[in-house]
Image (tube, rainbow, N blue to C red):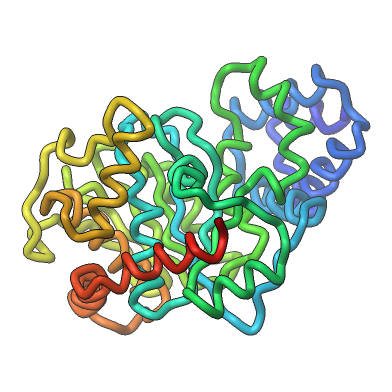
Length: 331
């Protein structure tokens, strides 16, 4: 580690293979917390590169529990989090809308870190029991088109850096890894980032991974399409700034997608959206994210058609039926 730190202090960049090995060495407890802290801070000060982030991702996946969902090509919808906006569970809602439209979804998530309710919170509130059992996840995909992968059951490396990250009390490169370490290695992703610097980094990462993707950032700092401002989208086929009006959707006030003061508030909004009884603002923000997720799978399809497909899934009741079936299979 001493040589690695000397190189980082000198401004050198590490290769993908090198950072993968560093991650593996961390899980084998070859470094003390002080060395791990220095490593993370050195990357923070200089800024992590695409190859360095990919190497850490590779190491987490290699030391974790894989979930092979072949022959299905699954989609994940996930954001970096940490945007401080405390929205309701937009990405998780969108996953059920996309699954209701007939696509295969493997949602990867965790408990809330900075908001009232994370993906795992809202899923668990419905009585779902988390599992790492591949057969159960395959059954979910086959019978209702969606499964949920609770991050703590799969990314074992995270526990080895947990104390250091907690002690530092500031975001590190490990905050960027959550969206990249889905153990099913999805073929498609809608990935939300909270700022344009992260947007550019993930755009480069996804190009290297060779997956179908849409990366979205609202220009006022949401890690999803919030409809509170214009938003940028980068994918395999486009890179463009859109406004809500481009899809005949009204711009909304941030308070309209606030997740509430308690976990129960966020869960109620989640259920109201999928039950098609939520406000237009709450439904529209889920639908536009679901639309760009569908477009990540169907790159040549007009986004307006993808939005119509998402709307039909929600308004027909298929999204709600998907949730109910998923809960019945996993409670």
